[in-house]
Image (cartoon, rainbow, N blue to C red; front, top):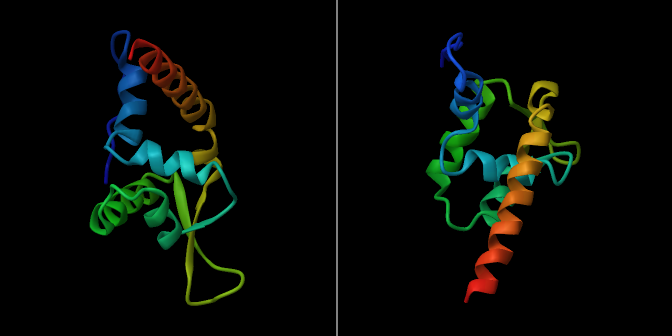
Length: 114
């Protein structure tokens, strides 16, 4: 999938980032991948119970196409595939960490309001 490179007014760098991590599940998938070295499809499927297998596969394929993640054969089972962050994908760590921190603060704020 070809992605646009935005070279315009303020806000465009954010738009460039969002086009890569946009989608209901991509940032959640990335969050889980940042928790370990490699993750199998079934592990992600269990970790994100609200996502359908079809949508998970689609979001993983898009992240792979954008060069954020890569598939590799499992060390312990050649028939199993694991997903790992690429060096390019690892550069998203500050973005995902900031989203997680903001989400935790938001959740705490909302609990106090109840």
